[in-house]
Length: 186
Image (tube, rainbow, N blue to C red; front, top):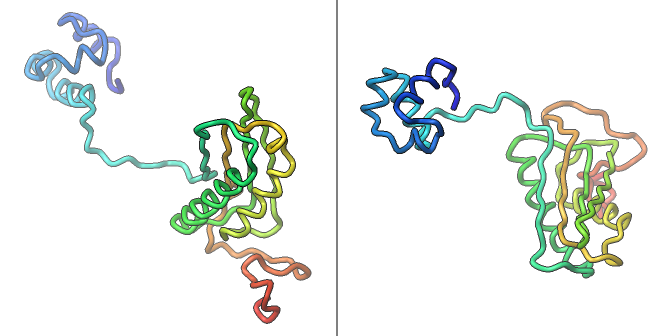
C-alpha cells in the first residue's frame, strides 16, 4: 500500500500483518494504537475504502472498444455489426470529451490467438460515426477475417485533438462532415 515504508512495515509485522488481506482483517483500533492516524488511513485503504476523487493527470491518447466473440467466426456480417456498434460508441466518447481523432486502428485476433492490427491516419480530424465505420471496414478488408476464424475484434481511435482546435481542411477534398448527397453542404 502507498504510505507503507520500512518502519511502518516493521510495526505492522510486529502485530502479524504481512499482507493487505491481513491488514483488512485487523481491528482498526489496534492499527491506530500502533500507527496513529496513518494506521486509520491504511486500514481503510486495505478494505478498499477511499473517498478521494480519482484525478487523471494525463490527457486521453486513444479510445477503444473491443469484444471477444462468444464463438469464433468467419461471418463478416457479425464483424460489420460490431464495427457499427463500436463506431457509434467511439463517436459518442469523442463528443463527450470534446475530441476529434486522426487515426483508426483495427485489431483482429484469430482463433489461433494470433493478432493482427491495421491502421490508417486521415488528413483531417474526425468524430463522425460514418468515418470511423468506413475506415474500420476498409481496414478489415486488409486482414484475413472471413477467410480465417476470428475470436476478437477491436477498433481504436487515436491521434486525438481537441474539437475546438483549429485545423486546415484540404481545399480539394470534401470535408468529412459534408453530406455527399447534397453538394451544397460541401
